[in-house]
Length: 438
Image (cartoon, rainbow, N blue to C red; front, side, top):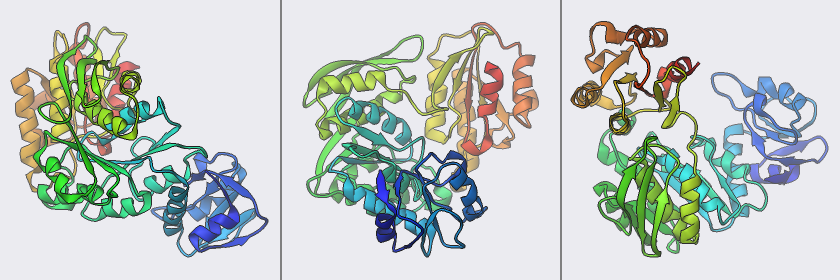
């Protein structure tokens, strides 16, 4: 989105130093600056002000600063993070009524990817990149929406009550989608009911003329209907206004199903892997229909969608085995779904390389052990990386990524075998998948 530097100053309460220029888009990383960007240096573990010179050299047309002035045009503000928020609010004011907020404990990024594909069949669409879903990601998505954007999709994450409400003050969504409420980030939230309270802030923020899109299969999500005056549209595999029937999977785990909606019935063929992705497709379909996307285009969008990196990426390796790389993040719900996914694949042997599931709160040991029990029930050999809570012993308990790869080689990983790789992002198990596919 284009702003003059005087407009940036007006939005952020700043003062311009240097000549008036126009900026196009915003970057907070000097390594990712594009020509014409506004560079916003943030103060965290490292002070972004130290990289203003690099950003200008990379083509930044101007920069915010709460410190010294350097060459090129600057807008001095009291706090660069607060200024980024204010700039997101100003960008939102230029967008229309098709702004979607998506939250939930599980599946929000996948649903966001599916909905972006659906909306793009009909509207010029902007969506959060990857998991840009916090107090930085939401204003960045808004400020980087190209001029002429007709639909904006905002993923909204939270690590405590009040976080979603703060993001809604910036994004002002007119459609809100809630996927699932689960025991994720309990170390920050406290209880699962606190999680529900926090996620429901999205639904409370919707205008009366908006639409709440709720998962009817999750009782805590369905109960959020009482927290809004907006129209409520539900989805689910067991219940809901938008449902799936006759679900089947092909040899690549791609689902096919009959989509049943108040707008009609249609057959859907997905290009993403996993039976559990059907419910995300239903949420995307419901939100797309609420936005005015025709049913036939909803089908096209779901069928052509691709997920963000490191999510349910099933790849055939040269060694004849298959790797399901779902290493971006993990919690008990998504871990169980991924195990069941490889259980549905034809295979000689099935392995799961797993690491820690972070921020689960007081039940973290029991939650890890329950995953090990499920793997045993499914006949999946679990290789635990630097995480004793799974209860894995002997050669299948390894210290690091290299140990996991070495263990699989020792087991003779080869033709017809399947390996799942999954953990919270902090474990860095994507390196296991990379090594297995090298």
